[in-house]
Image 1 (cartoon, rainbow, N blue to C red):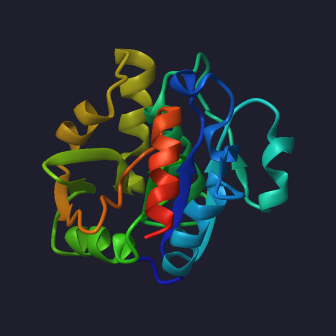
Image 2 (cartoon, rainbow, N blue to C red):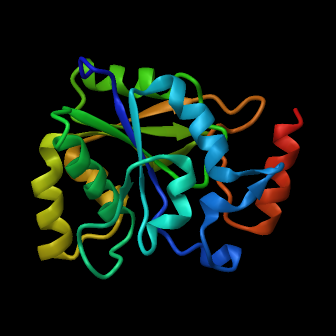
Length: 201
């Protein structure tokens, strides 16, 4: 664990095609932007937050977060967002950084504690799992991996986060799914309705 406290980056660089396009983190969930719910979950767990987003950063300025665009051209996917997070963390002399996707409003309150504990115990990196599924974009990553990741994306065309997880030898940390899956993510309008039901629990 970094002495000044852990850093985290919300990955919001996707195109949200299944939601009809646009910025998923700005979608309304129970009267507030989806991103606000995510920040509520993360802020008590970390010392500093940033947002990975492309195009005009003005739309996210009301949240007061550093905006980190992909450092590689061509929208190569979530691995580019993880790389942007690693570059940002390196500039703050951090050893690790947490990433989470911009569509998961119910993150567990012990997410950072449990993922970072796995790395303290010797794991090179850690990702979340729940209900028999792995969530590779919910990861606690070593900053030392940034140049190998940059080369893998740029020179090898690596795109799948799960493949990067395998290369690093990251461990999966399992979280319970009662009364709901804390990594429930919003991909469709029906998911938005389901999330509103969860908030009423």
